Image (cartoon, rainbow, N blue to C red; front, side):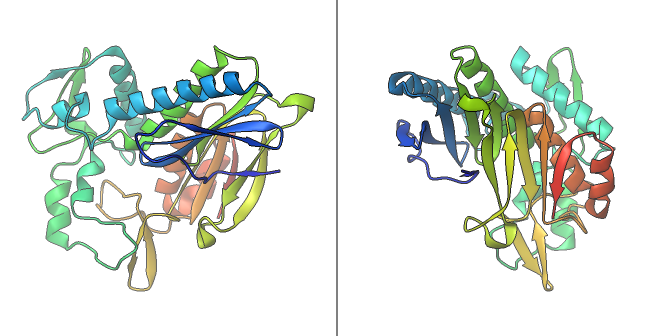
Length: 307
């Protein structure tokens, strides 16, 4: 039976819930503005509850540390440093190095400084599109190439910001999966808002069945079912966050060079890769290629589905 990648979770800040579904446990909680679930293929409720608690703690730790919406973390300190250099810890440095590599490999299309564009874009399903001057004002503060990053110290011109939202959830999935694998021999599946990692074959050599949302009927129907054993999966698309403009549906992923949603992009791109972070990065990079998404994916040596 396929387990949908979108599922209910406990309210923000509350403890995880644990339910029995068929022959596995489903733990649910809220983190990173997403419903989060952990599936455990076993019969020991206490063990499953402990694993879900580990997952919730790790997801919320990463959210607290890297969310751009908080005022009490390192990201806030970096974004409000007014041009002063900020030294970061090893974990943050690894993510910044990864983001820098993605920026370089994508020719500047993957840019963690482009979050400032959301000051003028509101992807709420409405019809408001910002004017040319408003976009140009934001673009003056976009460009990883303007950032000084070396020896674990980062400095940016005044007005620039970083936003790790494009890789944070996938990183959280992989981190959580690693913690769970160190604690149990049971098969599990970590699913944070549709970004997921399956940790091995289930009992009886069964795979985990994952239903992928049909973006034309979000939350109501699955477009297809994937069977995965040990792999990461992520989807990039316009199903949940968009704006309507001149009869077109514009997705929330922005081209940091134009300040506009990616032109000619697919409705959705789903990628299966060895890690969730890799799957998410490849799906996002493909989406950023617009009409060239399929050709890009065919060169990556990964499983993918494109609509």
